[in-house]
Length: 268
Image (cartoon, rainbow, N blue to C red):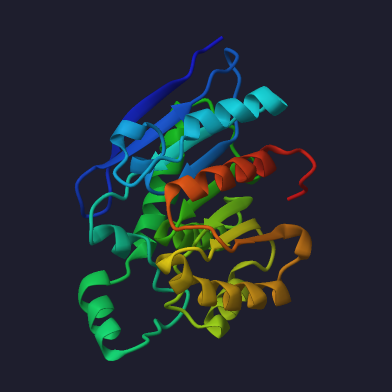
């Protein structure tokens, strides 16, 4: 039996300094390989004392799932802890033309955000994933691989799942910041990317604080468009009216996401 452990890696990020990636490998049988979930905001996943904005308590979630179902997963947490770089690398350009509510928002996004999510995507697919599959006890193949994130990380998880539907069978899209894209562009982009494979989209939104209320209308509009073109068996949409925009709210949602990812009855 191999005991659980967290490994700290520094992997080369395109045109920037090496990026911290933390890998949680749960207790498992010697020689056993496990499914894997890649996640944004690795700085908020594991130890309460190291988290600036709250902790997802991922280790506890994986342990709990193992106790209930006998199944577990390796978790790969990619750090996105530098502002404004976090916003840039978790916002893709290619979903559609950016929408602005007013002139000041246009100036702020144009000058400070400068979306560059495709570079992060390249880092995940070409650097992180191959390294993990070569050096850690993970199962390979689409059916054993998922992506998850919240807020701007939720937007990036949506992008990763759809853009790489041959790589990820499931995407956890929690409180995604999709306010900058029109519903028509979102629909058109999905249709252009998922001709053969469609990932299972696990989408969640709250409506219980100012940030969630800001994101809520765009989420509802986008999810209604997605329902028009997506198989209902591959789409789960959860709305919690009193849900707030923080890690404490996303923690139990992740536990359900983890369970669904590992559940054998889901046919991807």
